[in-house]
Amino acid sequence: MGALWTGVTGLTTYSRSISVTSNNLANVNTIGYRRSYALFEDLMSQTATSSSGNSQVGLGVQLSNILNSYQVGGMEATTTSTNMAIQGDRGFFQVRDSGSGNLYYTRAGAFQFDSSGYLVDTNGFRVQGWAVDQDAVAAAEASGATLSSTPTTGGVTDILLNQLRIDGRATSSISVISNLDSTTESRVNDPDNPFFTMFESYNYDSTDPDASLVSNASYQTSLTVYDSEGQQHELTVSYSKALGEDGKEYWEYMVSMDPEEDGRAITAGTSKAGVLMIGTLTFNDDGTMDNMTAFTLSDEASNASSLNSWVAADLTAGGLPEFSATFLSASGGGALEPVTMSTNLGISSANGWGSSMPATAADVGTATSNTLGFNTSDVTLAYNATTNYATTSYTQTTSQNGYAEGYLLDVSVDAEGVVIGNFSNGEEVGLYVVALADFVNPDGLRREGNNLFSSTTEAGNKIEGVAGTGIFDEIAGSTLESSNVDMATEMVMLITGQRALQSNTKVVTTADEMMKKALEIKH
Image (cartoon, rainbow, N blue to C red; front, side, top):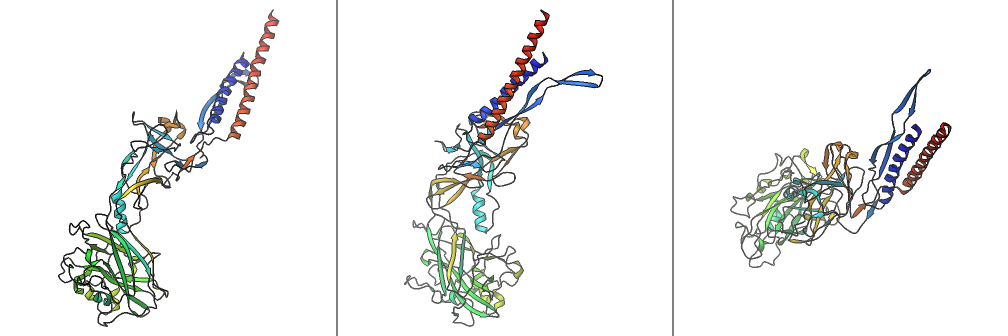
């Protein structure tokens, strides 16, 4: 009788094991499917006493547990930009049933936007994420700070694409990186004012607006910026070689706008209309930048033509000089609100101006020591700063962070799971960051069907995070993760399960024959 029941436990257990294997094979093409596998354990043993000690006879086998394999599946490229795949073993996407409010977890990243603008899975459940803090992004760009991650605001929420249009944004930072030819001859024509000869020569004549504004610039470059209405304006950065002395070279620079678009009352109709910032650049004999000064028009100034009216520029938290521009409205509504722009020429100092920084441009005078705006020990030089090599002057890069209004064209997803809106004005704006989740014991999750898992107490605490940080691997956009079922492995498991089932069938039939023989003896 014991052998009969032992065989029955084998039949029951291996039948379930084959069911697990069959389910794996059935889902070999199911995206994001996690392979299951069965674990077995023996049943308690029957103990009999003998002269040599206790003798135990096993009573069979039972299913111990069914666990999941979380090894990452293969990556399949798709043409749907909102498809996502986690490129590692850890983590799940989070989706919410808007009807019940229940959260579920999945590796199947076949997401798309529904008619209401929500990013949903194939069940219509809404993908969860954090909204990007646009103000924090803009502030970091303006200050020149480097963000270690995309800033977000609030808690995890439904990803909703309702920003089909973005308003124009005023420029708050510009970057102009050039090479200034060290073989250029000095343009100084006033030895008593060697560092601001170009500024002195700048002359706007309202009766002849087409006349040249600067007569002695060694090199000029320009870039487009935007006002608070999203309208375009052109800024010009002019450079003029001042002098070379003691193994260093000194250049004057000036940032200006179209004088006819200058809405500042103090410069209106004057010869200095359009001038926004002036200063000096100091270069080492190897062509690298060593220091700078920057001056802007004082709020209390009464004469824009006087160097005494140009005071040390304010600096951002990152140590970049700022100037203020007041543009005239394109609609004829007068002057717009002033726009403050930080200026990156490749050098900065987070500790601010040094003790040798002159209070006004007039205080620079003729002494080269007055061109050291930053303390030398505090200077941060960018890898692509403005240079002074013996080659033709040219502009390496220009950039700014303003833009005109734009309309959403499509979206994409980057490695950190940032859902990026691509707009008609060329801007790529981070809208949401996809929220990933993991658990202390993922095997404690409950399968709910439809590629979904739900949390249980056995799964332990949930850990939320961003792709590419902490325990979470990066996300691949326009990609789906295939099932992690290996067909060869499952076929082997199916064969071994079948053999085990057949063996236990033989045990049952053998025990049955033995019982028949015993009954024959009785009769």
